[in-house]
Image 1 (tube, rainbow, N blue to C red):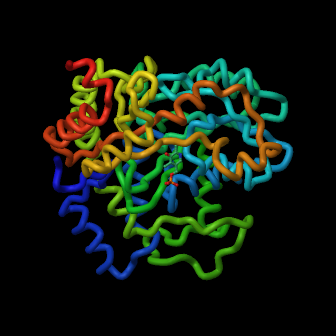
Image 2 (cartoon, rainbow, N blue to C red):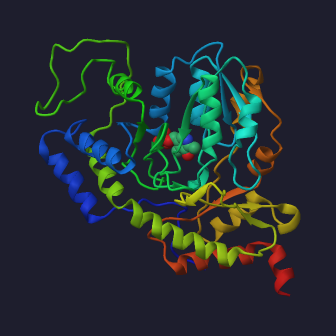
Image 3 (cartoon, rainbow, N blue to C red):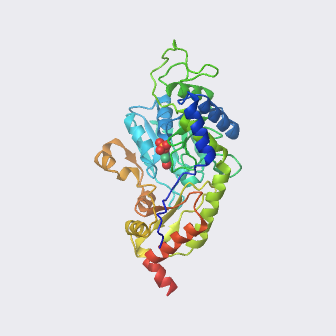
Length: 391
Ligand SMILES: *Cc1c(COP(=O)(O)O)cnc(C)c1O
């Protein structure tokens, strides 16, 4: 058994990252400045999008997008319940109604058909999720949204660096948010980026991230902002500090290397978990050309495995291995259960089935092949049905 704990996620911080943050700390300017501007330029160059706006979290990026779109009371926003709670919380806080649609049982992503079926004349936005680092089937959703005059914001918190079938990298078309939380594929400590090919929306969000002033916290060549700047509309305060931006930028420059290593680890998991009774990995959607492998998810089905998901996770913990749940369906959380009048839902059989069985295995670039094998060995010990198969 492992003597050292294997976490389910761990950021890859290089000496170069440490040096970049240290240099910023010593520079005399640690909040939003040249570090953010350079990072945003690099994101725009890679994706070919018009605007990239760095903020303090993926949640903040979504908050600003919903606010800029004017989403409020009487509006509906269609999204999966199999997602992180942040989007649904924001829809609710805006006074709008989240409308949940079911996901595919094995990709955990919404289909264009299920989204279209949930749209009404009150629908103001649709927020699909690129789950685990795969790409959702966005083209038909874009078409439907533009025909019906509905906004489409892609929750790409899992999918920086993901490439769609046909070669389009996630974030290069339309409006999307990325998260730079430490468990995500690249991190800035905390942070997020909104990318959009709508320049007007991008400028508005840039303004909204800093009090709604007509200027940024920092303007090129000026070290600071003009003291006379005016509020053009009431805004938030969620600009990303340069301390974080330089870390995110260094990580972004290594994105392909990090994804390649994640892919190798995922492949080893796939090979070794294949045929393991009661343990089902997700399948990769046909709309994904390059999976960025933010998460390696299995579903533990008690009937076949002979163990519940929660006991499975405890078994891993007892063997010094961490794991996670991504996600417990939002509508099953306490507040949403006690406020069922404030959301609407299509039937969610696949969401519910997965919510009770889902488990994320350790996956981060510095993991060794031996670490993966430790996880597999632990699973073979924990899952009673494995004995049946090997006996
Ligand atoms: C992580 C995550 C977010 C929010 O990102 P933060 O940077 O933590 O605010 C949004 N949506 C999904 C699906 C996520 O996994």
